[in-house]
Image 1: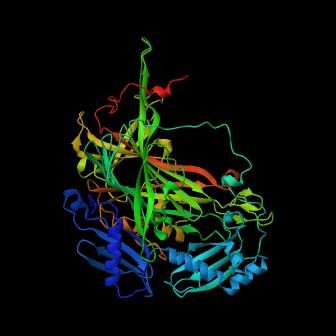
Image 2 (image 1 turned 90 degrees about the vertical axis):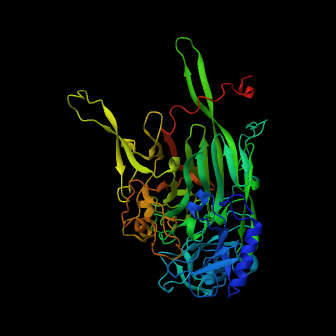
Image 3 (image 1 turned 180 degrees about the vertical axis):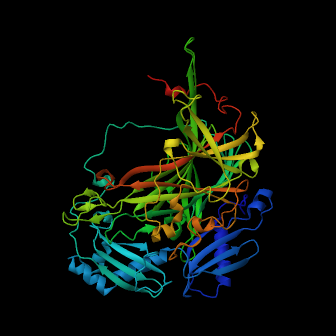
Length: 631
């Protein structure tokens, strides 16, 4: 048994959970979409009394509803199964995706549409070269698909061979609407053929004309080993203590983060994300994937042993998952952890004596990468020596594409990125849930800005400005947006914990540059992903409120998201505070994003404000590594 109540399920635990479920579930045709630990009660974890281990299995079977949610108590050998409704279904799983592809490739109307484009589909070998990408149908299900039916939309691409980048040749204008509930293609939408783009989109090393020869080796070594200590999924580094896991929806999670035995965050992770497209083209106008919950992002975590995703003295954490048929899959190296030098921590040169004092910064990096269709998302938690905590999202992979001609190209909504190839303008919005327990008590939320003071006797030259603060006391007060012009930040304080200056200890959320959701308030996109309307939300802790867009989002219309959760306008004056922070990128594609996209960044910082009485890095060693000397 794991030594920590929040440790991810082991292979043995998952096997036991599947066995208990199979014995109790009457339908033997059940398949699984996701698996993970049902985290025990927060109060029990903090009190050290959490004992039961419960695995949550979510999936579908032949029952014509939204699937099942089974909480398997492997400690007691019991299972509690909940049937899901048609308006909020189990996430899409690998069987759904495989079925959607199979149904599309066997549909006569779709096959004839491919033949009309002179694309071969009459042999098994030809069909293998057609890449099908199934997309969620929620919010924009085709009119012929009955309400509540589980559905997907399938778009297609043509590959040169099995290893080709199929996205280079989109088969434009053709969409298959798949009714998974009935097991058929309900409709084929054909807007007319556009010639396939002529050029290859291969980006692997074998297909490059040359590689750079003047990059010298750069090695990262720690002769004495890393500075962190690991026990299972628990980590201790430079005063920080925490544990890590992979949640099927939220992905990479930090649990019970503390610093010098002072609690900071009970839980920190992504809650939800959405990728809405802004192009009116019928191939894209409906796209707004809730990647975290519709596809169960955590189930799509990469194995980081397959490339140079991490450098240095690395510790990896493996994760175990249940496959669709109930077998156990081990994702080796699902979480990477290592230390990085991060330049100078602080420095000053005394002008009179020319004496220099400098200390170097270092950060601990905890990362995982998830591939969802054409996009790859890296989530990186950074812990710094001065108490700063940072989340950085790295967006890469392959952009969405359209085949275009000079007559059909719409450059304002879909810039040209290659010959006959355009990419739609779109957004990526990520909502993080930060469950605070700063210094172990109830917390308050403040908004801080710097404002110019009016001209007057106390400001005769108009040069003065001041930091002002406002207590946010209700959920409605806390629906706020960034304001770079006024240096707006948000501060979490513990009014019952004072520093050496007699002031409440605090941490501030420093947001990055971030747009808001651009879809109209009346749109289905906003109804389903309303968290994107604001950069900040806050709620009092509730165990069942973990999802910014609702617990189950497949085929749903927006129930249970943050706008609904905050309708009661609950009091947050001083409470077990949960902060929700939305960060976003509006991506206007460019030729440099093709055929694979250089990393684009988004994120935020959490920075101590009076948590310490002075600079906490004064005790850093003054020596520099000998290897840093110039020759």
